[in-house]
Amino acid sequence: MKTDENGAKQIKLIRFFISHLSSLLRHAPHALVPSETLPAALTLFARIKCLVQPCRPCHSLHQQLASSSRDELSTHVSPLLDALLHSLLTSTLLQPASRLLFIQQLCQPSHIRVAAQSSAHQSEAAVEAEAEADAVACDDAAGRLALAQSALNHVGTHTEDVQQAFVSCLPHLFDLLQSAAPHCLLLSSTGTKSERISSGLDTAEPPQEEEADLLFRCSVMMGALLSVVSGKLRSEALRTIVSQVLSVLIAFPSTLMSIDSLVSVRLRGSHVPVHLHFS
Amino acid sequence: MYTLSYVCARSNQMTDEGRQVVETLIIVHQDAMACVQGLSEWLAEGYLKALPENMQSASGFPPGTQLLAERTAFGRVLSLLASLARSHTVDIRPSIINVVYKGLIKVLERAALLMPSAGFWTACFDGQALASAMLQKAEASLHELFALHGDSNLPLSRLSLCPCSHALTTCCSVLQNQRTDGTDCL
Image (cartoon, rainbow over all chains, first blue to last red; front, side, top):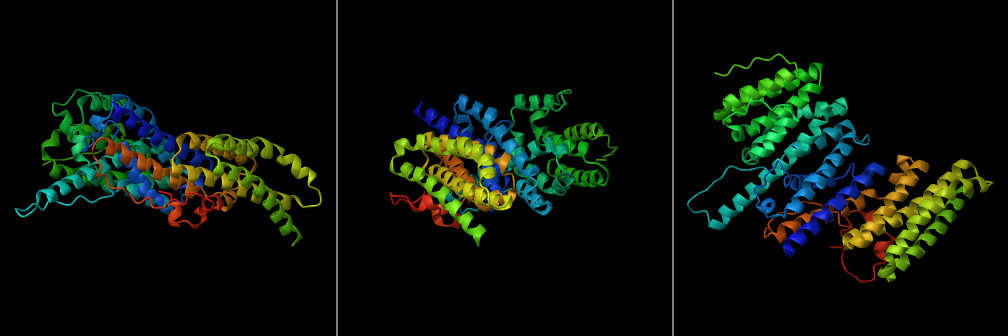
């Protein structure tokens, strides 16, 4: 009980600081930009965001939090982070070059996951440390993905240079998706269902719903982007998406049917004629 | 020369008034909230409300000079308030910083109507130092949250803009230099 109370206090403090930071940024926009603080701030936001549904952290913290704390995170802290990110993207004080850099920082994992190099001589501690680093990297990627998804949901309200920056960062977003794969693949079916409803994709449930979630989220994000950008930018985005989707298919061949149906739905929704041939 | 001396005199006068309040705050923490409220009320309600009238009555100086003087003076007092907020953010006294932030934001809201120039903010309000301190504390709370649940291995990121580490020279403000307990920020 004491732990729950202390946890709730810490979450309230996080909410408190993020809330006041948003106010500060609104009245004195130069407070955060340009600053060397931004990359570290993004990492912090991602760590907080990955504790909020639909993410499911590799760390066991989320399950241990009291339900009131989880509610506080999803109801108050998460929207504050979304609003803060939106303010940063719309701030006129960020020059296009800085904005591109900021979006690149958002879309790139802070830690690179390295392939496991287990050997017979590797100590148990080293294996544990490696697993821990992987879990942190995975949480970070999931948090960034959630932030990016939030930004892309409103990408239509941003300037063309922000849209261009997101299109340029599409390959990084796919990397992020793959880094966050354990999160996405472990999503509960309830969360996925609500996401489907909110994004207008409440169609017949595919049998392998959980396995397809990685690609579902991918299609939601890409669909949001494709539906607002136009002309040359859309062609560029579409080319990148198709090539990235094909490379994901090679990595996850079992999800062929899911991606076929989901991506087709989104692409049709964005009125972009496209024919994918899987052989 | 004449203009500059007026600006300096006005600036010093206001800084002295602000400093008096801050010094009281440092000595008696129990009175901190009342002092900060007093300072922010004075800035938001008293000073800013009276500003147009004061500027009209300050005859003999060109409007540009008056405005420069007031902006400089106001900026210095605002810096005191911001450094106060930052100091208490670092020292983490939630009941006090809540009042400080509310006061600071109220002053910013009011000031934005009268002094909306971006150059003004950049010149006199070290928002980056304050924002860094707030981010540091949010990160510390997250770290504490993990530690509470038995996971203390979460690596800290590089929010290393601690005022006392002199990463930002402007952080070492009047207030910071007047700390009496001799402790470091973190």
